Every structure is written in C-alpha cells, then in structure tokens.
Amino acid sequence: MKNLLIILTIFCVSGAYAQGQLQNEASGNITYASGHVMQLAEAFPADKYSWVPMEGVRSTAGVFAHIISANYFFASKLGATIPEGVNMQTLEQDLTEKEDIQAELKQSYDVLLGAIMETKDDALAETVEYPFPGEFTNMSSILIALSHTNEHLGQLIAYARMNGITPPWSMAMEEGEGD
Figure 1 (cartoon, one colour):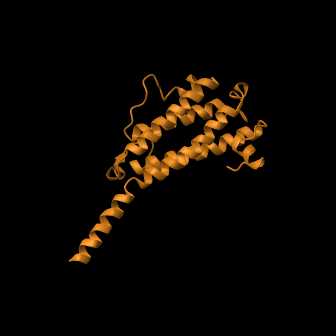
Figure 2 (tube, helix red, strand yellow):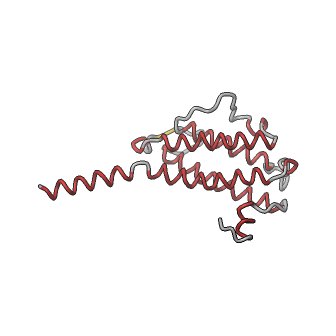
C-alpha cells in the first residue's frame, strides 16, 4: 500500500509539472523569435519600410503588418480579445509608418503570448474554426503561430540583407558578444 501511495504521489507531481509545458515552451520560442523580429523593425530605416524585392511581393512594412495581423488572428482563436480599433482585415493598408508598426508589433506579440499562456492544458484539443480547410485545435493555433513567427523572421532577415542591413544580433556575434 505504501508503494502504491508513493507511485501515485510521483504520478501526480509529474503530471502537475507537465501542466503548461507546451504553452511555456512555445511562448519562450516565440519570445525569442519575436525579439529578433522587433530588432529588425528597429534596424530598418523608415525609408526602407516601403521597399519590395520585386513586384507582387509584400513590402517590408507589409510583412510587419502581416505578422501583426496574424498574431491577432491566432490570439483570437485562443480566445483573446483584440485591442479596440484594430481591424485585422486592413492592417496592411493602415500600418505604413515605422513607429506605428513597431508599437503595434509589440502589442500584437503581447496579446498572442498572453493568449498562449492563458490556454489551459485541457483546452489544447478543443477545435477552433479557421477560414481555410482542415481541422484545427488550440494546440494547432499555438504551433502555427510559432511557425509563422519564424517563417517571417527568415523573410525579414533576407529583406534586411538585400538592403545592406546586418541583423543586430549578427553584428553582436561578429563582434564576439555572443547571441
């Protein structure tokens, strides 16, 4: 009986330890990548926000606005309330100025990260409706948000390099300061 009690205690403790693990790890990874995205938003000169690599492709400002819109979209799927005055359908047209984009980018990541951390483990398997085909859950929303942030970080690194802008964390690494 004593051994059974010990085993049950260990099981309960380990189960409690795992609570929120996906949320913690995903938010940690998004925080890291979003820090780089925000460093790039700062590093791009205001006059390069309208730059496009070729016709038919988003401008630098358009990529940042797309990230903001997606952050709010994924957060809304997790049950977050989107800040008043934000129209996700027109963000790419509404946000063109560097300062406005930087402020909204930070706010959108704050809302997204808050929504992820507020998602309870027992709600991860709940399905949510997306405007495109497939079955999605709250867990899907978290994982897609993580993937989306990294996808567009890579795009912005390429945009920066094409404009002669070295990502700030790369300069630190080149100078021997680490990551």
